Image (tube, rainbow, N blue to C red; front, side, top):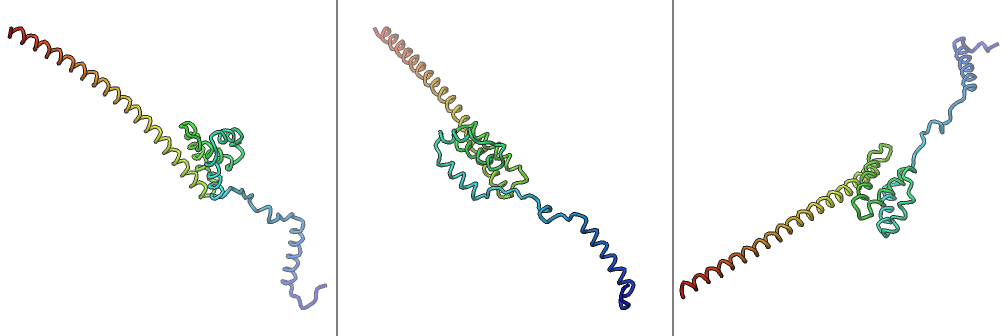
Length: 180
């Protein structure tokens, strides 16, 4: 059956290989595409910065109109867009929303490191705006209290000057009567 020049171990090995090849042909082999994880494409840092520049050129009305159309649940790109739109508004409440949005992006471990770093910078920027607003508000309150204290002190000074003038007038009247 087999040529005599083939040794028995070689024949056994070839038979085993043939059986394994037949088994392997019946088992579906996953393709290379099945093993490739689905890559999620995120915008680049440059694209995010370009978008931020575009938003910086918008008027308040345009920003408000675009905020209404943003779907934050549509992915990180829309969430970033929502953050920069809020950042563009000049209000404390919008800055807190922007800060919280960028915090959410910064915490997203699926984002590339550069995007998380940019989100972290944006979060810090908005937090500094919030802190500056709070500090300014505190200083304005202190200024108002100091102005109130100054006005009260000026009133007291005027009253004291009136009392001193009245005492001077009384003293002058008494001196005039004694001199008579």
